[in-house]
Length: 106
Image (cartoon, rainbow, N blue to C red; front, top):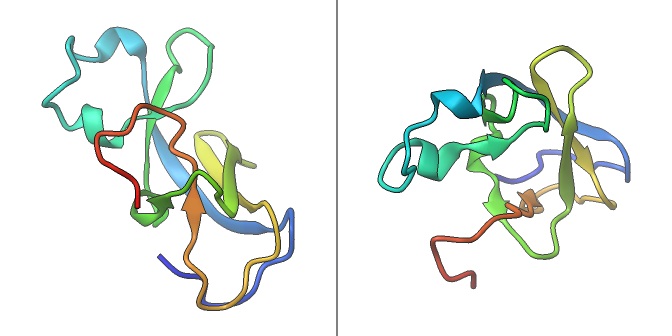
């Protein structure tokens, strides 16, 4: 995923809908399920622990030095993707997956 235009630090890059998934509804173990690959942490609030994001967010790659971060969105059940620093047009958009990776980062 690349930026089509530039973004200033703190600027909203995208607001994406989220499907909220309570921890109690997740299969155990998660390994081998669709949740294992697409589940994002949402909050500590019981019944709202995890989410699957819509929009283009799930196409962003991981980076230990990301240029965007995820925040609780401006609307209920949304993520706000916010620029951490200046992002130039054509630059890849990345966020820190903040979990044990199932792949070797390059």
